Length: 443
Image 1: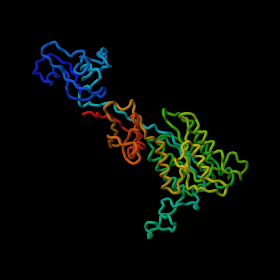
Image 2 (image 1 turned 90 degrees about the vertical axis):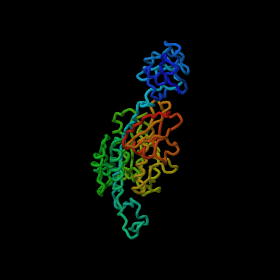
Image 3 (image 1 turned 45 degrees about the horizontal axis):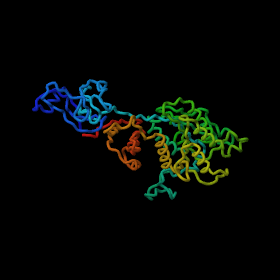
Image 4 (image 1 turned 135 degrees about the horizontal axis):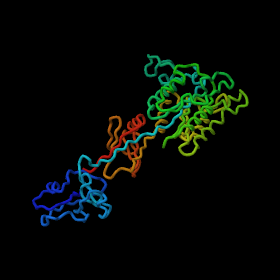
């Protein structure tokens, strides 16, 4: 390591500290990681009272300076080392030693999660409320005998409507991520949908019930039917719901790096086609759904609107209308551009509330990206230190362990990006910001 000082004449008895003091340069050690390492000593030569450090900037030499510009004639891109730029020119082959309190200090970075616009397109058809479709939402009565599977002496929790389960999951999502996502809600059919075979079963509002906005949890929960409602009715006009949601998102001016998403949640195949020639044809599968979703995903650049598809207890079989809802929702998920990573099931199929919550949590985990770029890369001889919600994470873990451990990892050897893992990622997704500083690694 190189002690960089501006030397003046003195006797052989002069100590290093005295020499430094006479030169007006502190020897309190800290590291400026902007240069590589080498070793040298200050040359105290009492044979010449006028002796100053030479212009030789190899090991052992330095030139007094007041700013980087004063070092322009020194070789190899030198800089001025010392407190308040009053030290010595140095050619970058070693370290600048100044104040230990600022060793390795660089401007902190505070990555902020750009809140995506997320429209929840929610199935309010009669089957979501119908008592014939009540389900064992918490899986405590798998044998359907009315008693708790783990304690046969205890009654199982009552089955509940699919809508009540969906309401519970939506409540958790919008409340947890209220600060980190701009959320909205679109119902299909609207609250005006009724249980008739005709257009009245297929009505959808031209504008979402809750427009996308920041801190929108309470608005969403106030405009959708309450959890215990059993009056919901109507068909499954999913394509109309998607169209209204997409039109709304297209009307929002995007911030830099902001993205739009739709999360479609439904318990069946879409019907109520705008192309239906008569009331009976409203029961047919609406083949407009997939092209509408695909067109939104194909919009250029950041205007692309990806659609996640979540199914509520979807059976892989042909129904009474000769439609396999599993297959058509697979097609919709593929068209949306963000299908589930599964060889068979491309949409997220939930057979109970637990799986429904897991599906939405997994989707939000993708929408709120935990990969963070490091502006300018990691400064030499430092390492990132991450702090969030009172917790500090200093040492990286292996990227291969990111799925099972809390902490952070470099995405690759370039060290230009880090991946937040486990609890650290979850905290970032909820709070929307994290503090990153750089700690000197040389002592």
